[in-house]
Image 1 (tube, chains in turn brown, purple):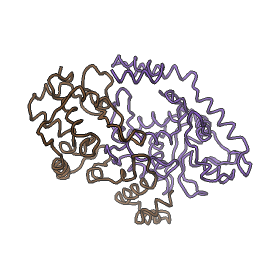
Image 2 (cartoon, helix red, strand yellow; image 1 turned 60 degrees about the vertical axis):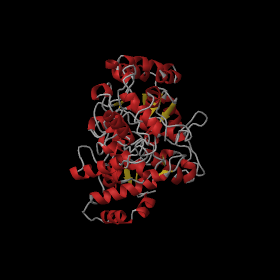
Image 3 (cartoon, chains in turn purple, orange; image 1 turned 30 degrees about the vertical axis):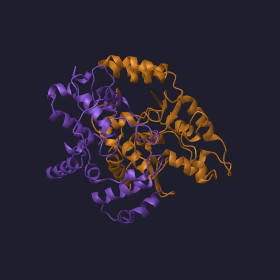
Image 4 (cartoon, chains in turn purple, brown; image 1 turned 180 degrees about the vertical axis):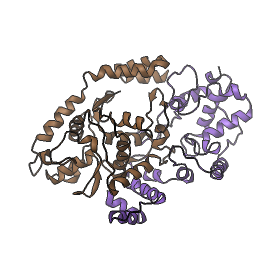
Length: 210
Length: 269
């Protein structure tokens, strides 16, 4: 496999051979990044719905693959947010929220997009993996902030509804290099599903706002 | 409560786990107690015993045992071997973790084909994996030994740097990297505590407790499996067994765990 990796990364491979022959210079950060990417690509095989193109990084993924403690420069962050915001497909009917009860089911569902998942079944959003939402659900994660009382705190208005929809559709539009997936942008959730999850956050009847 | 229903379906042991979870504040304590109780009779011992027998048994076209297999401390030396892997092996001109080295010995010493040696890395209900048994045995012979994974040559240093890059590599449908879940202290997915693998303490705690008997699967799982299944959940394609990426990531995490006493095979939910 190492040989495969070398084939894929000719430049990085050359850097390695310098090292092997006793050259004291360690490969540069750029060279290591290029080689790591090439070796990764040679270390996976497609399985079910997970094809190898999932390892082809887009601009955000490339720029945001940063070691802990490092952040992107301000202008790069602004570019990522601008481009991701511009790519959001807003609902044609101008309605940002749907049925919060269905949104709760989507928020609970963790399956979707893994090669072990049925590609024909709808994906979940798995919100509870990282966020507190409805207080009745005690099994919630803490990677993201608590969203309890999301609508109540921000106001039950169109601005909040639009923000919720946009944030779920493409979180990178609001916070460059966030950990949160881009559910609409990447086709994980449908427009109707995003509306339902947005309703879970903003509908005054939703348990999230009780 | 669909979540609770799902957890109950996983069986009595997991149900116990989710009950403990209701007391939010003490959930982690309760889970620790639960693990400690299970540690008394860890079924991993069955894999260890089978692995030891396999290690000593003459096998393959060349009818050879593993007792000439060099895991880095000399032919046949198992004691402490796991705690110094991965490392660079001049005979293979490659950095190898334990699993990769076992495959190497199956091919070079026992005469197996590469494909045969690799074909069953992870066991299931109807097919026990010899590799997982061998991993259990070899790892058990490092229990109590301090992790000491060297970066003493260019190849080892390169593997570490590549592994570090891969740890932060974001991709797939969900933009996940290893770091998405494993780069901050005190975080959880649902109620599951997540180790921060970028700190010495976090890497030590995590790395020294694999391989492990996984109660929910009834299987002993190797570190290769741990990476393989993380990438599945990361929505990546399938990680190839003993691939260079798997070895580089193992090097990154194992080296970060240096100084801690190895304590596996462990037992996990």
